[in-house]
Image 1 (tube, rainbow, N blue to C red):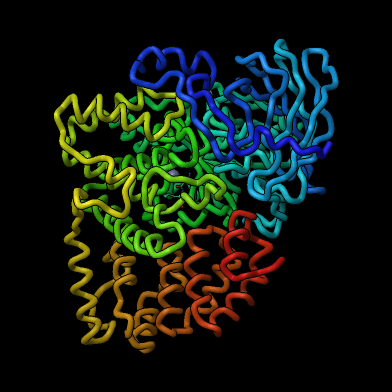
Image 2 (image 1 turned 45 degrees about the vertical axis):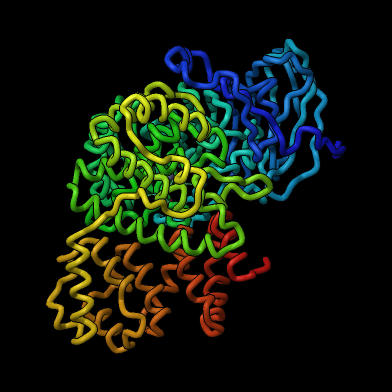
Length: 632
Ligand code: BES
Ligand code: ZN
């Protein structure tokens, strides 16, 4: 069974035109004359032979076993064998495969599991006939399954019940569901999930709003989606409505603060629709997960997964929800065909997020958000340019043989968004908005490549409206091109003046209260403190503003970084507590990274990591193990 079947490995072809179910595609297909109908796209990160045979619908019958920290059951694939081949290839990683059957009568099928690649896992090749319509795989997850994090009660807010959540993007769905794990193929899905009767299960699908006493829940996702958007969370959850089609799930002890923090959600959906057309997914809900969630947010359709670290108490971090909501268009409606086109997902989303923020909170606020991001981009461009893969500052990436995670930098996010902002500036907002709206409508429920987008952009904006703009230097060239517009913020200029005052005086002389400034102004302040600012002044600042324990995760984490950098030890206790509690990689990496710059710091980092590591999701431990050369 372990026979090598490398033939299809790594270089697999994807027929871009055969993605998704009929209902989802028919209308939009007719409208997309410019789209290369039969273009073949290679996905370097999947073994699946979707160009020949692909899943159209997937049905899960799963049992969630908290005692053994395992999910097991059956995945049933409805397949369309367009090429009439005798093998269908799925992606699997760290899964136990028990049995495979084909057809209505569950006839046992031959299958082979290829050699495991550390990153991609293995191809699971099932023998079929050209007539086969159904393939059922009986399987179970293992303790190596990276997508799932099982939490014991101690790791939850309520401390009474266990919890489970999944994270599929980019290539982790294959660690909990045997599937054709490429964004180049779209599927609808349904699921029957059994959980302990005191818990509620929710998915990226139509969701229940309260527990029943059987622990059995049924789910349906009727729109065709890429596999990385299949998601599941199970816990002691309650629901709180926000607006007619928006609401929030959280553990009971957090539901009120979550509902308060996210109370602008309905307005955000309206604002987004106002910009780029109707929201296509029915409800838009958010689940606030336990703090070990490795990301800020994940745009699972109908149900964004979010970190509790956005609950600052004053709605100051809700741009993250605008971001995940924006993915309901960029990413979930129009999806990157491969991870090398990731900027099509994230760059558009950051641009769109900023437009929503501008509509709801005003231009001054949106500009501060953009400028903070832009400063991060400048730093990252510098780091990448001096690193092992300087070509990673191009929007279009080459990630063959590499982890798709390598492409998840500010380049895709912020250079991508800044490219669109600059294009908007060249074309004028009205024309650009009309173009984007049309782009989303005409490509809905499709996957596209960077090249598809370039062709579409030329035809529908640049040539049509006679806009002169060198797009190649942005997409296929390094760094930030000259044609980028500049972003300025008067508010930040005022912050700079206060920093000057601090240099010459004491923190008290600033005559400033914590609430006088937004999160972004404080971030700007902290990041531009003089490198030789004395420990005494750091202490003064901390005494007045209590950044180390202020409850705003963005400010706390930045303060820990600055404290380490300035040799100020007064925040270490709070930093340790933060690192043990919070598993969001974006916060962990800069703190551990800064500690790792000195021998003394490295020792402290290792000591804290030893305690904190059991709380982290595999996505975070993978990164930090590497950073601290930690061997488990
Ligand atoms: N889709 C991403 C998260 C992601 C990216 C997961 C790549 C796995 C692989 C999500 O939309 C995102 O970008 N989240 C950000 C927040 C956002 C406001 C920039 C995060 O988690 O920090
Ligand atoms: Zn995103």
